[in-house]
Length: 161
Image 1 (cartoon, rainbow, N blue to C red):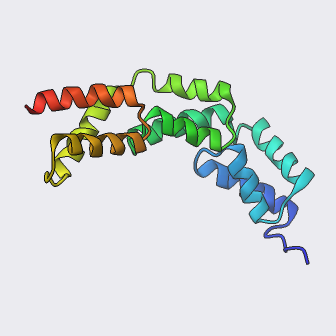
Image 2: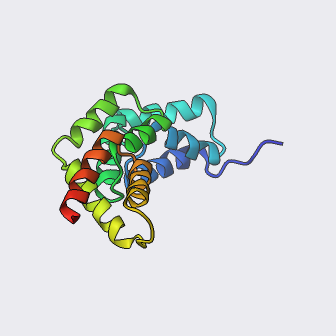
């Protein structure tokens, strides 16, 4: 037995436009939302094409907003942001544009501040090597690459001595 549609065809188009207007969406999110409303196949693809042509959905705009938000609010590194974009099916061109969006951001300063806050919150029972290891794993999980982390830790540990 097929699932019932949430909205009739005309109402579906209105509702998906409203949903896209609330925040930036990518094609994958729109396709998933339509599937949750039991809208599939040609009809789903036609609605997505209409959203793109009316500029309700833009992959590049989404990628830029995603990168800005994840960096500024969640303090993610580029590796994690890039993975998030790839997992949503964003093209390499748009990922490059998202990277450009962060070009003026102070990633090193953000990483150092993040590590400094984390270091203040870690209970210091253990060696300096264990502390460094904990901080490294934390920053790596946030999406920063190992070279960035090593240089930030060197600066942080040198300032702390």
